Length: 357
Image (cartoon, rainbow, N blue to C red; front, side, top):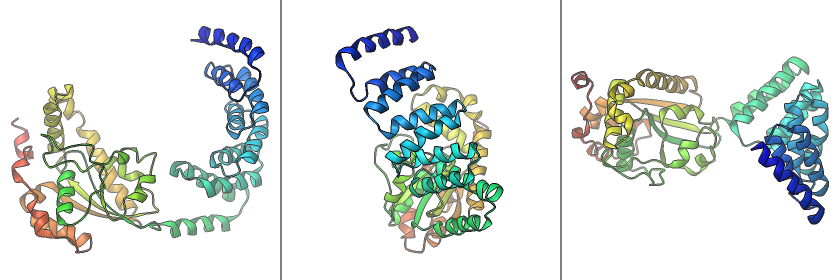
């Protein structure tokens, strides 16, 4: 691939003489050299691109290359130029703050981080910004009042965007059944309908593709509104604190979950469905996932209300469990309609029978 690129680079040299300077031309060459780990030639071409087409992305890329090579002083010039061209770009200010910090220019670092905080929408990077600011105000600038301001702002933001109703639990723990109960009781499901009912879930899954990206994309939460959304247990710890959550957590015996998962894969014709032992190897990871999810809920009681519903009890006494859920969610649901959803015949993998299978 390197030989091919060098050949292409020669072609670019020839083309440059005939085509002249045009936007994007040097950037392609520069990006190519960076992919080949030849950062000096990459930067040289990106600088040529900046002369022809002075856009913030090019300057940001140059700055990042210098940061990666521990050349903070050289990173400052392109990063500052990028911030001038895109003053509301949070990523630029974030890296500018980091570069200033490395050069021990703590006032300027804090200023850059504060600017990044205003425009940042990515929760993970926002957390990094907050950590950076705390370190600056506590260890370098000695401004405890700024830390108190940050704490107060955090407290004020908790639940500020409203309340979301969530059904959670491990896979094959009855989450789809609970979604069906809630819909029958009067709620509307947040679903895109892409995953249709099948032999493993004859009444439907009530899922939304956007939920699978919760760890990195949370914007869809603003569209949930008064609807109920299903979020698998290992994802709920990615829920941002700016909402409050009423989480109905379906709790099923882990052995039943694993065996049900194994049988489902078999019905789908997947290779893992032919190997019971392989499925059961996930027993400990599933136990840990359940424990982490429940612990996260309990550790975040400021914005999370949790109700555990044992799957076996939901099957054996659906009306009683429907009443619990209804009370938890504000007593607006039709509990009899909810209970009517439960089909005990679908309880095919019971804990007491698994050992004999």
